[in-house]
Each structure stands twice: as C-alpha cells, then as structure tokens.
Image 1 (cartoon, rainbow, N blue to C red):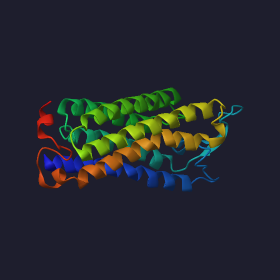
Image 2: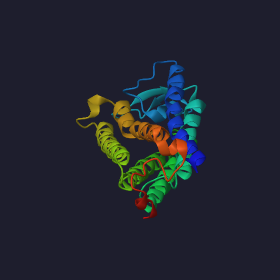
Image 3: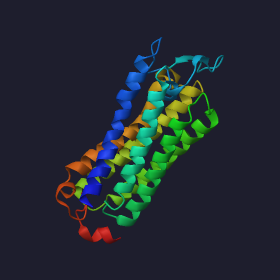
Length: 234
C-alpha cells in the first residue's frame, strides 16, 4: 500500500510536465504564441490560420508541435486518473476519500479526452470535455477537502484544496467574461483560462508533494494524513 501511495502521489507531481511540453510547443510557432491572448487549446490546433474570424476572440494559430501539446494533455489526464486510483484508500475519512478519487479519476479521463479531440477537429467534443472536466474536478476536490479532516496536516491540505477550487472558479468566471468581451477581457483569454485550468494541475502536484512528504508515505501506516486513526473506518 505504501508503494501504491508513493506511486499515486508521484503521478500527480508528474502532471507538471505538461507545462514544459506546452512551452516547447509554443516555441515552435512561426509567429509568437501569446500566453496572454492565445488559448491553451491553440497549442493543439492541427492547422494554421486566423481562427474565430470577425469575433472578439479572433486570433492567429499555427502550432507545428501540436502532437506534443495534445500528447502532453493526454498524459496529464492519465496521470491524474492513475494517481486517483492509486491513492484510493489514502485519506482520513475513507468513504469520502474514495468518492473524491472517483471524481478525480473521471476528471483525469476527461482531460485525456480534451487532448484526443483537438479543438479545430472536434470543437464541440473538445469544449464539452473541458467544461465537464473542470466541474467534475471541482466536485472531487470539494469532497476531498471534507475527507482530509482529522489532523493538522490534513486540515492544511484541505485548506489548500478549497483555496484552489475558489481560485479556479474565479478564473473560470473571468475566462467566460473575457470570451464574451466583458470587463475581464483586458486580462486576456490565455491568462484567465490558465487561472481556471492550470490551477487544478498545480493543485494536484502540490498535494502529491504533500503526500510524499508525510511520514505515512515513507514508513507505511494507515495513511499520510491520518492524525486520528479512528476516522479511517468511516
């Protein structure tokens, strides 16, 4: 079980590799990729040209390394899902923790679907999977925050989880506003979208690091956040 826990936490930390992969893909653009103005999905678009012409979000897209960007998204999702499965029984409130991991595993699968369906090829499927993913992951994180009761370390992890849900939700509202030309439009599509979605990736990696740092992850025992063992039976 300790090995499974360590492997699951490591999988979540490895989700951070999506960022250098995106940076490498962005560096291949013939015209500079705008981290503020371009969407994350623009890195995975398979063609070149002006997209959303005549709208508020008209922008140039040409990503020769789209396979790298889409592959990194698929890997990110699979790592999130694998980590959730491996961390299935690692939480102080066991029942709530298992429900949370089920949501996070589904969220990871949806991230992988986003990568499999490039935005220019399957826009409806891509957008639906991305929207479902953020909602499912928020739900899983909120349930996990409840499952982390019982120790000081667990409360810190729960507080981090709640803070990231709030930050991601704020980013999502700003992103929707930017797409619609609202007051958040000057912030840029890319910045607001990354606040909404990348916050979730960073959260998973941060929690994975916390699990790896806990004594329970190194020496065995009931779990990394089990300050009150009796809670594990709930």
